[in-house]
Image 1 (cartoon, rainbow, N blue to C red):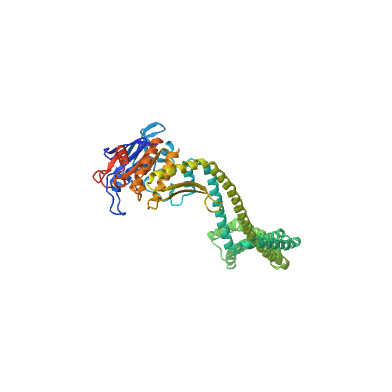
Image 2: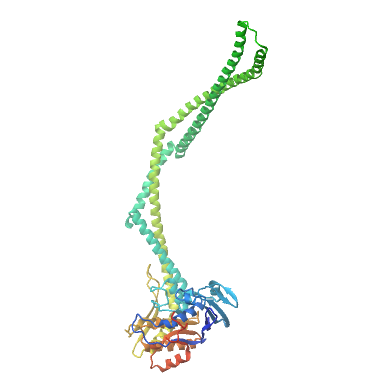
Length: 555
């Protein structure tokens, strides 16, 4: 992907800046500023780094709070890009992760997929500030991915799989060793005693199993626990039945009491009527017709209702008494049965002793088996460590062979960088580049990339080494066709070396048909280097200053 044109458009659709880029060769974002008075001052307020950030947005970068500020929120970046020989217009709104291509809105992820953007690789060719490590990485200590991507970017792709496997084996060893250490501390073991401890433990387990087998021969574990479980279950069921019978018996007894009371009350009612008649006869007093009629009605009611109910009540009492006797008999049977069960559970000494011994031995066995499990885990961890170590040996052999296979390419890179350094310095300074396969080790990472510069003791030599690595990737890499540098990537480097580096990068971008974009301050250039000044003059795409800031205001 290459950027050909960029428009910065405000909320009123006014074009704040329109910048055209050289498709190949250098593109200078020039800062016509003087050198800051101290290291704490910067010259970035004019918008050089901001513009590089806008370009990075077009190349699929995530939203950046340093860019997406309120002052320019919802401004548009409209760019013409070249992708696989096709020129397309893309638009991104600042503060949004969406893109518009040919009036179609797509997400950031869809945009990356459409243009096959790998931000992991892009971030190793787009530098808005300098890095701390020699090879492109996010931190001072490059990760496995950083190493693999660097090797891939300089066409040493076959290193990737064995390096990946080597890291995995090392990480597995590290993880197993950490777990092993935790087990040793948790169980208060010493590693030298592990095998002996395991041997003694197995003997003790065998001994306990023999004791359990002896108990089993007399009263098997299943039998012991089945008997107990059956007895407890049977006791519970029969006890519940007794409770239900007692409850039913009590209900019947209460019912008989109520019926007996009723029958007494009915008899009393009949006696009262008869007594009235007898009193009148004894007194030789003739009852009035109305009274006689009322007594007769009472007798009829008594016969029709009360006597019938008395009869039913008597039958019911008799029936209830039969059930009460039946329940009482069953209750007595169950109580005797429960008493026997209770004896089985509570009073059989041999049974109780067998249970106690069996339980004790089982608990001890479980504790020993748990410890044995931990010891087995220890042995398994040792096996895993040994297996991973064996794999390291195999992978290390593969890496050694690959290093031999790649020797010609690496020597080519070494010669190339050696010549660059000769051109870079007027005095005798030498460079030695190497991709080393380290000695096989469970912790030391397998591949080391090194670039020595002998003869330069200046404070900027570390930065020079990093820029030479960038040039190496830019010149020989086939994955990306661009490289972006912020002016901070040259901080601390002598202006003569900056000039040479920029001339080299310009030549490389021309030779390889790639695009190089760099922000540069006037004070960083060797004013006597007319060749570079001519290149900068011809290839400056925008010149910014205190009076001509990118957005027209401080940002």
